[in-house]
Length: 253
Image 1 (cartoon, rainbow, N blue to C red):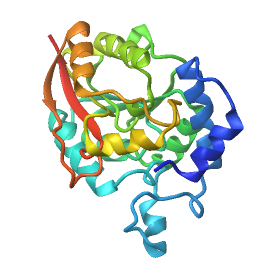
Image 2: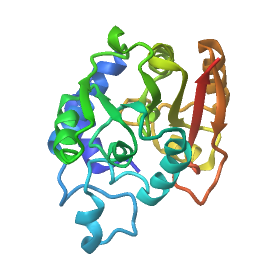
Image 3: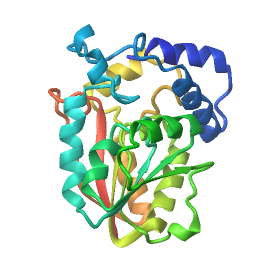
Image 4: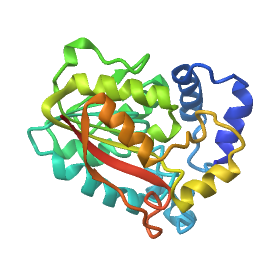
């Protein structure tokens, strides 16, 4: 389901998405500015008015299912890090995933193309003193970060990126990973029932919606970029994300 505020942003922008990065900047800056606890649509219909305030602690919790997301973060991310790990999140957004990860690692870099999202994250995550917020203007990381990270991750973000942007990140991530580092990413999956259902109701691609690919495409990119996929999701209708998307962990070859 695309929320009403996303649809409103889509109309306000009225931009042809030739530049995926610039388009995402405009969408998510505007999303952060307009986000309202009282009016935002919540996809999880089990959340009633009494639970709403606690559930929406972070921008982004309105999407998907928080319980399902937490289980996947444990299985695909936290098992690969420890208290000495240096990690980076691409698309920190409002900070919902960083809040789970930061207490488990030595340092977390929160990357985002949207300055307004970084402001929201910094405010929501102020209790965590081991987070550095970094504004990205493209898929390129600062050269000083080369071979710095034990883990790079991105949850529910790459679903919005086109294939060329995903490929650009694959190459850049490899540069900043340590030799034994891991990367956990999350894309759309046209092969699943939920992915197909989402595709049917989206009349065209725009970064506020999804860019639909499948696991075979990811396998090609991984091989060409010099990665090995060491863990990947299987379709599971009982989990919101596994019913719709593809999650995978890679390491450098």
